[in-house]
Image (cartoon, rainbow, N blue to C red; front, side):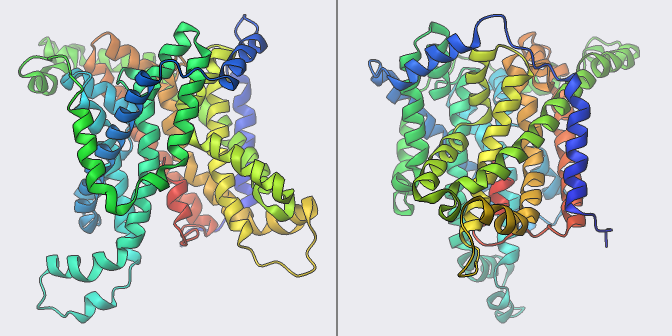
Amino acid sequence: MPARISRLAVVAGFTALAVILLPFADLTVAGHDPWAALSRMARGFLSPDFAGIEQILWAVALTVGFAIAGVALGGVAGLLMAPFYAMRGVRWTAIALRSVHELFWALLLMQVLGIGAWTGVLAIALPYAGIFAKVMSEILDEADRRPSDWLGDRVDPLSRFLWARVPLARPEMASYALYRLECGLRSSAVLGFVGLPTLGFQLDTFFRQGHYGAAGAVMVIYVALIGTVRLWMRPRLVAGWLLAAAAVMSQVDAPPMGRGALWRFLTSDIVPAPLRQGDPASLAPWAWDMLTGAILPGLWATMVVAQIALVLTGLVAFAGQALVVPRVAGRVGAWIGNLVLVVLRSFPEYMLAFLFLQVWGPSMLPAILALALHNGAIIAHLLGRQARGLTLRPDAPRGLTLWGWEIAPRLFGSFVALCLYRWEIIIRESAIMGILGIATLGFFLDDAIAELRMDRAVVILVATALVTVAIDRTSRSLRARLGAGRLIVNETPSRTAASC
């Protein structure tokens, strides 16, 4: 049994580390006037231009198509792995798949499949298969085992699984799959920033052209798409949506990559250059150059961004939970607070960072703010949901007094555990911020792919995955020592916090 540690000690330790790292963070603002840029963006967003609506709607169709197909494929693969998740080979395969961000998968798949439908679908399906495998196995483990035991030893394992375990877990599986589709829509939109024709591509194009009104139209439609997903995606419509997704993606043409592209990629492109050139003696210098010139600098920048963002996430979440409780903020205030949190958690970190980049220029500041606002909004939403379910005394006060003396102390354990759940996600997202020009691990990966040095790209990708796995293990260990390893089972908020 691990020794228990106090929650305040964990919070103090993470805060102290962020303060120590703060002088190493590049928080500079570009030379242009950020307020002028923010003003131009605000005017465009407040007066969206729907003149190019046909083009935007096609991007919406592709965004939805990639998301539905990717989540469906990843869900089926994850469900097939879930019953065998206790086996080491299956578990490590799932860990490897989900530790690589979908943007990184897209960049790699483009080298083999080109910018086509399968690139977008597989970029979502591969990491989601690893996530589904883990979550579905937990759902199956938590389901009532008595019907399965009642069948006796003569029933084969497949029948036992299909008829005694899956039916009991199906409602929670369906609920999680719908939540995962929301994540898939965010992932699908972000894939546009690396060239796939989704909403992210339209947003990037309009910003480069200075068409802020058109960019505002994209953002309005995107928020509406995320906000209404539970209305248009119903279980009885799944088959129809899958057929529609297949029809839409059949219209996406990928440039031919040549025959044998996959074989060449696996047997030549990703082989370290010294071995490919028949010079194994140069392998050690090549690896050392990779370590000192890309992996360690990228890892350092990733950890600086992630650690500061994690502490700011906690500040946003701790303050934001009060905004959605009617007895604290009032009915109107809670409605406004919920609206703000919905908007912030609807936009992926990468998309928010892209928007902030237009205002403050390339530094760590846009990435840190984007990570803190998105993740803080998710945790604040979950804590607010718990706060509304608390049983309070009839004579309990209202306003900040209620929050400071009753709600915050009772939810402090959940707050710390949820922040630890999001830690791994923040690390993964910090790494991909490098594609925007910040010197995290994604910057060096993107640079290697741009130079067609796939051997270097794969090594950086492996390093990124190992860091993510190490953070995940550390987070689980800390939660166990806090006694929060089984945080809140109802409606799986812990799974939500540990997901997209």
